[in-house]
Amino acid sequence: MFDVQVVSPETVSYTGQAEMVVARTVDGGDIAFQTGHVPFIGALAVWSVDVIKDVATDDRDTFAVHRGFVQVSGDEVTILSDVSESKDAIDVARAEAARDRAQAALQADGDDAEAAAALHRAELRLRVATGETASH
Image 1 (cartoon, rainbow, N blue to C red):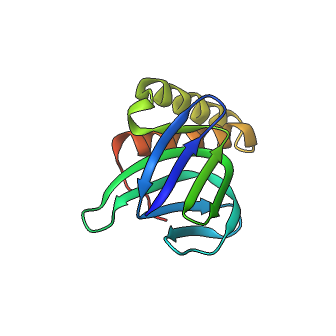
Image 2: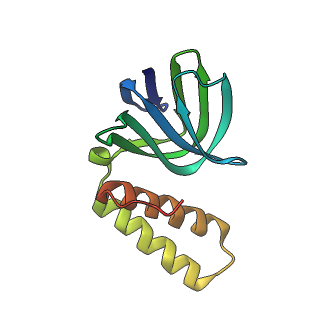
Image 3: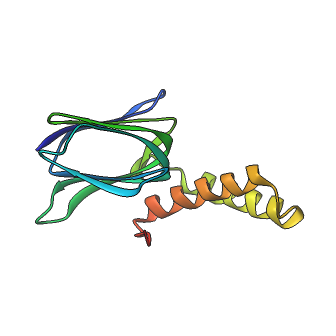
């Protein structure tokens, strides 16, 4: 078991134990950490992080994470992110409004990088809030 923390400047989203943590790094794709993993530091992508408390029953908590870092050291995994939101903390109506605004901005200017990033964040929030699984 790992001691796991998922934290951002505003909140501690999760503190507890887990058998596995799955995250997406910017340059390495998805990576899973289990007990005995070598020390690791990686930059996180805007994606979900799964804290799997029991692999056999697939008991997990999923968080929307907006960049940051993952660090594995000994029996500890720490997710330090700009934003981390649990399923229950996500305001679905707000995420839907953000998605709609971003889609409208992209319709007006298909090259709007900020709107594309906002759309990606809103879709991530909605996916986590609804429990939808992503095609990694």
